[in-house]
Image (cartoon, rainbow, N blue to C red; front, side):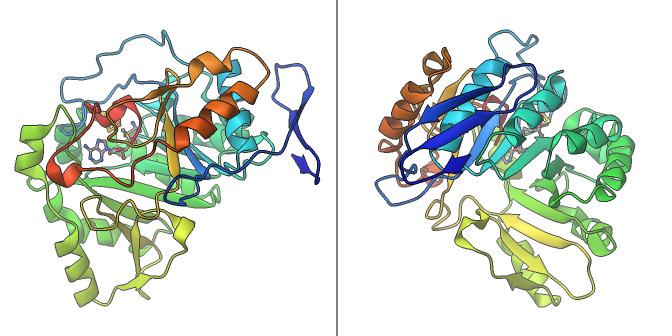
Length: 351
Ligand code: SAM
Ligand code: SF4
């Protein structure tokens, strides 16, 4: 993207498409009524998943085909529209994004979009060992892998998958690829993994990985499970501080995790506590589902249909739609009041 005072040239270098330049007037950034600026897009590319995580899809994926998912060309237009409005970072998620055969093409089209500085992926890791080198070569900058236990039988109980050993080998390969950041996501579960803190700490002692404990979030489908398994990250925070870990100061744009470091550990530890006060104050992210619905919040009731504006190479209608939609964003979620909006599970939109 070259920006001069009069015009913005969005140049597509996506392979398989004819090389084109679209001349687009410079656009205002996406800023909501609360003066929050949105520069981070979480893009779900499928609702399909092959794991059965107890907190997400305990009965497996309802979705068995790729029907209705955004096509590569629709994703390209969508990414161009967000980039024209100041989006700098895109995280590809799902369902399980690595179930899409064109994942490498999606990574490379995001990476080659002018204005996009960082492309990330969140995956359950089942294709990590096999494909991480290809993802890196396609332009992936940051990688989050979900690992809910380091014990293979607990891992299998939580996810329904026997892949832990392969995922850990995949993480070793990923470490050698010099990603800008490499993270593990672990959803904190009272009976299923909360006792593993020591093992997780030992794991990051010699590995340059950030391990993030995510507090279980209530969704439409997991109410009873939530009541049984939710643990606050607060107790982990207290035990970290008591054992020599210090909270790292982070920039406002760094996202909602609190991060802790320790001089004896190569890795760091993060806590994502969506039930804590002020969690939404610095929100910088918007979400788009694999069917092209704009989610202004993970727990919103209604979603804004963006797809119809992605049907031609003219991205102005999509830009106008995003600018009109952003003013509808609320100040925060109402999870504390048990309001989960229309989000039945996070595989619908990628967390
Ligand atoms: N399938 C991929 C994965 O598991 O990494 C990407 C999609 S998944 C929905 C994204 C993240 O959301 C994962 O780290 C997952 O553990 C987390 N997640 C799913 N349901 C959750 C819930 N109810 N509360 C907290 N985190 C959740
Ligand atoms: Fe699938 Fe990810 Fe949900 Fe687990 S958390 S069921 S891997 S979408």
